[in-house]
Image (cartoon, rainbow, N blue to C red):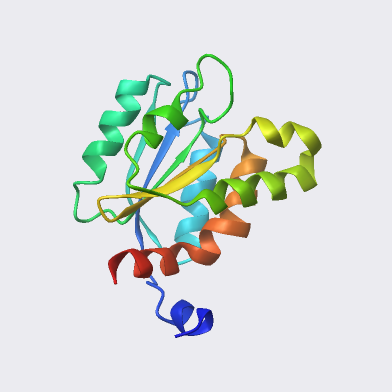
Length: 167
C-alpha cells in the first residue's frame, strides 16, 4: 500500500490535548494555545483537554505521562519550552517518555523555520514521538512557529500518524 492509500485511511477526528508551557501566560494571554485549538477544530479535530503549565520538568512529565494513559486522548500537542534557555525544559521532560522518536519532525520544522527566520532556527528543539500509542508533538511557543508547525506538518499528517500508530 502506497503513501496515498495510507493517507486515505487517516483518522478524520483526532482527540487532542493541548498544553502550553509558560511561566507567564494565562488562558487570556495564551494566543499560541488558542491558535492550536482553533486550527485543530477548523480541521475537524476535538480538544479533549487544555492546560497551561509552568516550565517545571516534573510537572510537564507527570502531566504528559498521565495524558498517555487516557484512552480518549490520541494526540498531545505542546507549545513552549523548546528553546535553549535555562527555563526551557519541555524537550527533556517529553523526550524521556518517548518510545519512538519521529526525528524527521524536528528536522523538517527547523528547515521550514530556517526559511522564515534564518539561522536562529538551530536553537529550536521541536520534537515528536510516540508513547503508549499516542503521538506527542512539542513545538515552540511563538505564534509564528505554531502556525508554521500546524499548517505545514501537524495538520497534514495528524490523522495519518494516528492511523499508523494504531495499525
